[in-house]
Image 1 (cartoon, rainbow, N blue to C red):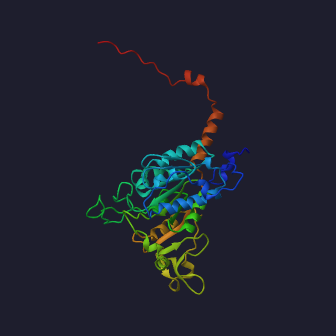
Image 2: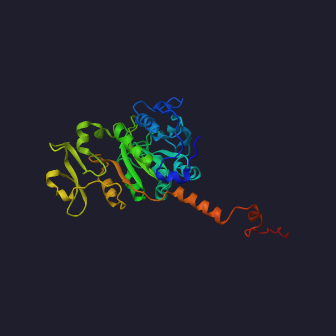
Image 3: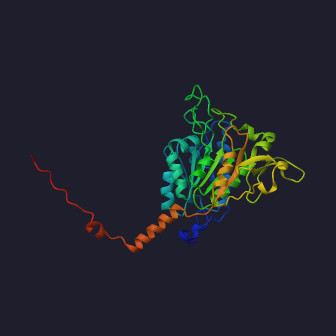
Length: 365
């Protein structure tokens, strides 16, 4: 086995840098012996197949890939992958994964979570993992409902949605997970959809290569408790007029393609400087937005995230932001090395150090 300096080389990408297997891997190599048990029609099946097909491209040994999940339908994911994994506790997967990423720089650490697990009880853990820029790949399956606990409304459910926990309609304003991640200063943020295997695989590859926290929101169908929530985006005719696909260095457009090969509608800045979707012939060519996910200023990426509407009349997909900044786990390990160099550990220091005290016996009354 070849020796690899993961502490130094690992900074070049988000991947754990260890030798790959001598023989090329296949998707089947990542299928565990566990029976996959989700409801018929669940979008999780497509996501699982897409992830299994993408993992061989990483060139890593399976024992150097870890999937950690919280609680929910999506959190069964680690059972179905022939890698290391942990089905952990509700909302705490980012915290557990942070510890693993700090302790083991040779691992590629992935977090599988849902809209309830990540954005309700786990909301604080999620935003701080993103803020710290821990080297984690976080896949957030968003079906806009609690599925495992049988259909209560979630932090991304539509306002007015009737569920078992909101019999007269949800009074809550839903989260936009991409906006939330960008507000937490995440260095990589993307969105895709379960049925868009090509687009999903593309953002998963980009997330895997990113050094730092990478959040990918995935619109995911729950056929039992929120069936058809994303059907408008899956219909070919409707998706042309609703889905904006972000591509680095290209104009942001949508709609039927005209004779010039470009979408008939564009995203442009209006006179107030805000982003708007306009017919191409009405937009000033200088105001049409060219996508730059590497822009250090997250304000444009955030504005793009706000174009997405809860009713899906507009849905922006692709990589919103991908910028380079120090990863939390790299910096923690650097601090540990520096501390050991400046103050070599000694058992004598522990025994005879200054932080000791004497506890006197309690006086008798």
